[in-house]
Each structure stands twice: as C-alpha cells, then as structure tokens.
Length: 431
Image (cartoon, rainbow, N blue to C red; front, side, top):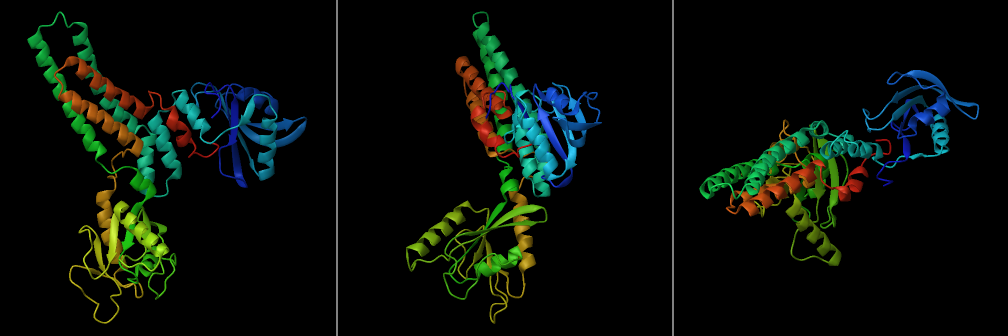
C-alpha cells in the first residue's frame, strides 16, 4: 500500500464497468480540486452537481456532471470529487488518461478509498469489514448481516464491552494510586466487587462468541455427501444442485476427488460436496487419496448426507435411503427415502437440510462476528475471566488492560496494520 500519510491523490472508476449509462470517476486527496479545475475550469459550489465540459489541451473529453466535497466531512475524510461521465469505454479511458498525466495523481489500489476513510476516522475497522462483506453479499442473510456490521452494529457492541471494562480498570488504577491511603479490608471488598463484574462481562462475551460466525453466511454451509462406492452420491448431488455438476457412471469409484458445488436456496448459501466412496480396499494410490480427502471433508462438514444401508458414523448425519425407486427400497424406517432419478424425496431432503441449517446460522436479528473478531473477543473474555479469579490487585489490573487491548484491536483503535492489506485486497479498485 502507498504512503500511509496519503500524500498522493487517487482516482478510480467507482461505478460498474462500462459500457453503461453513467460512469462515476472518484478523485480523493489534496490535489483533487486542482485536478477538477484543470479539466472543468471553475469549480462548482460544494455538494452541488454542475454540468461542465471536461477538456484536455483544448480537446473536449466529455460533458459531465461535476460534484466536489470539501474534506474532512467526506467519505474518505479528504477533499473528494466525482465526475459523472457518459458511460462509454473510450470516454472513461480518456478521462483516466488525463488524470494520470497530472502530477501527484495516480490510480487507486483495491480498497484504498475505504482505507483512507478508516485512517481518517470516517469509519471503524468493523464497519470496513462489514462493507467488504456487503460488497460480496449474494444472499439476503449475507446482506443483512453485512449492513448491520457496516452501520456500526459490531463496533457499538464491542465499545459497550470496552466501556464496562474501562470503568473497572479505572477503579483498579485509582486503588493502586491510593493504595497507601485505603484500608486493607475495604480494598478487599472493592476488589471482590470488581472481580465479580469482570466475570459477568466475560460470560456475556462468551455467549456472543459461541454464536455462529458470519463465515457461515458468507461461505455457505458445507453439506457433504458420503457413503460407500456406487451409492448414488454424484447422482443425488446433481439432483440437489439442479444441474449436471458431477460425472455419473454405473462404475464404482467414478468420483475420486471432492467436487464442490455452490447452491443458493431460500436465501441461504450452501456448498454441496461430493466425495469418493468410503471403503477399506482402494484399488490404487489415487483412490486412497480420494478416500482420505473424503474423510477430511466429513470432519469439516456442517451437515452430512449419509448414503448407505449401514448406520452413519455420526448420529447427527442425515441418513438417506437412496435409489428408493428400485424394488424393495421404497420405505426404510429411520431413513429419508430419495430417488434422484424420479425426484422422489428431493424436496424433503432440502427441507431437512434447511431445518438443520437454521440452528447453524446466525439469527436474522443478530450481528455475527467474523473469525478475527471472535478470536480477539475470546482473548478479552479469557482476560476478564482471569481477572474474576484474581485477588492480587496488580494482576487484576493487568488482566483488565489485556482485555482492553483486545477490544481496541477489534475496533481498530490499536495497531492492526498487519491485517489491513488482506482486508482491503477484497475490495474493488474504486471502493
């Protein structure tokens, strides 16, 4: 990433790729208004769209709406300008070339507009993470969770925890400052009261950390189809996906590696995973590798569809009776009868998957944490739990400080530079 002081002025196409009706080029930084003046002449009034002819060396590039936003009350915290162009490819290329030719201007890197907003305090780190999820959202559940995060839901939650911990920490620090003046018995009572409050806060945080994370919304629930060779796994996968995603053959062992098929259904993302048939006598090394990967898939599955007459190794699996259209296989107790050939039971299988999924996904009205946030929240909860058991005031103070550092890392108040490049690399160029 460029100079952390953001001395450069950046620009990028911030709307969809041309051709389009309108193309919006955004410019942010200290030279933004100077660049607009060179292209459009007199600047319009702030926050008022004005029609201007954009020219370079006397040649008209486009007639565009120009809007300027003086910093710091802008999306990036800097002087910001937008050029609303006609959305042809040649028009956009010409304007971008004109901006590139100006000293101090350069094309933006992925996520750099949002990174500047974070650096200038316009948004917090959790809002930036929510915005990244919002841009990638493909389901209604993903969109709702991302909006809550982008609008500050996680930040407010964590700041509430931090405020409670800070009150406890301030009380302990005050006791340390006046240790010689306090009576020992009164100090002991105060420490016990603070420790009890730290324990209660730890329990509240643990309850949130234990909830399903946002990754299950974003990445989809992993539904693994498993069983012996030639059990009909690939055929069922195709029926569930509604398309021919896996090769189907009457020969046992056709599937030798995992096949992953993303599916959206009723606003929920799933990743259907077909696996090699499980058995103890593989024909060769390649088949053994496929079986090993199948077992790995089972350990990481959110849901397992088990296709075998023998009971599944995990009682939580959804036990199916495949090929129920064949004679003698129509109804089997304790199993869901399904036929990928006739469609029998397919809707019922999806119904059971959805019922199980509801317990694995974050509630619709919740603000789920991502893996980074959960990890740091768990660190804070551990520190508070340790504080709850402390009788030594110095150790109590240090545990409270540890909790506060974790809270600050979640919100971005502490140094988090190491993870920012990864985060903003997920953004598009113009965001």
